Length: 280
Image (tube, rainbow, N blue to C red; front, side, top):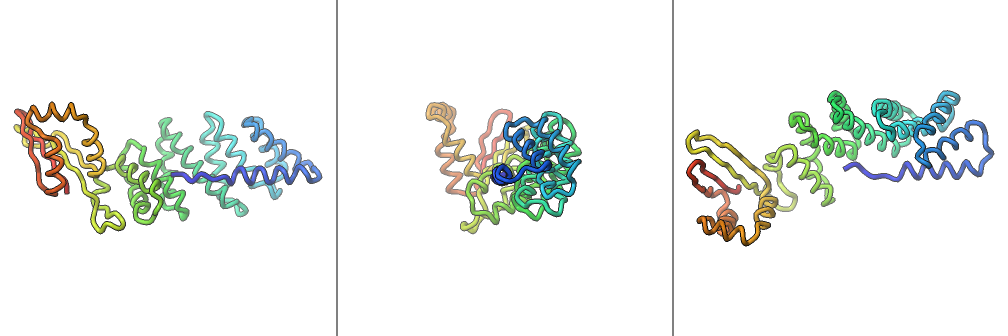
């Protein structure tokens, strides 16, 4: 979901090669040294150089870039997620920030916040939630994508409006498919009332309920798009289907009836349960 950009590399290389051919001043020399260390992925050493640069040259035109690169160095070091996140938050508030690097910073904040959540620091999910209302759609989309992995469905569901926004407005098939998967991860019913573009009707939903015959209440319930259910049912080997027919259940016939008679409830009764299957 997160937009993959090459802005970091372009800005890095362009400024680096330009400076190589220029007269090297103390601030330029220090910044170049930091960039070489970044290029070599020597994150801790590069961080030290950048911190020295930021302290010595707060009014330098490269100050904002140096701050961004510091965030990158911290992000690449284990255990420094909080520091990195705070640096990126400072960067996006700068007046002379680069728009592409700002988008990258927002994406890194989302990643770092999620990493902290996985470490048990749930309060950092707020950093992701607030970005659901970002004016930049890439940031909104990536926030909703990340939230779909949160175990607390109440929090994860906050991304549903953005995921539906993707389905409504975007044409890219891969982007739309990922949004659907994210919605299914949060709540299969979230796709229930969604109208696919160009079809003029909502997607068909496959329902399955297993009801305890004695308690008269569902023990299990499943609601997923028919396209996914059809894919799973069609993948059942013929040998297994033959065994089911011996038990009196013709799976191919059941699927055919489900498709032809939308809304019809097919019941399969066992000694302890009633299985209900239908599509609407």
